Image 1 (cartoon, rainbow, N blue to C red):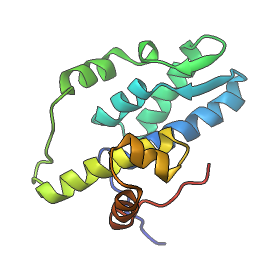
Image 2: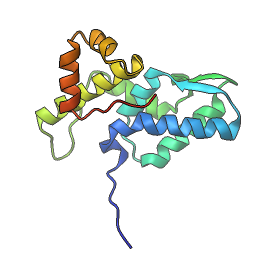
Image 3: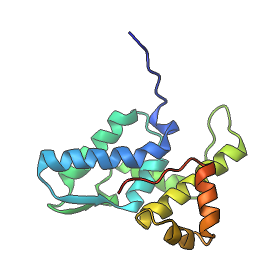
Image 4: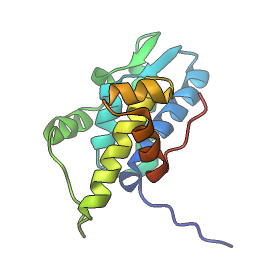
Length: 155
């Protein structure tokens, strides 16, 4: 028997949006509701939350949101549990450090990676358009993607 150690969701923030979309696709099939997407403010709130219940809590929150959602559309902020919204509102503009701290370089890299991924997702992974959104040259964006190990997503 092998043992696989997976860090808690709060330490894998880059997985939150991917997991949320996967859970949404699964629940779309289960419920038959044509929920098309998750609002960006909801993704931001999910990324800010502490996730004491880990991945299971994320799945439960998405399930609850789909059940409460109108027949079609997207998951919006008003469908989230109050404690998640309060946590998001309280953390707006604040940064948190892990108990044992973290290097500034690592934190800045994670933030930069998030901004680049967001720009790429918003432009359907078109690097030239993403570079324009971020006000950098396309070559600079490409170098940052290599440094941060951001791979082109299949869309």
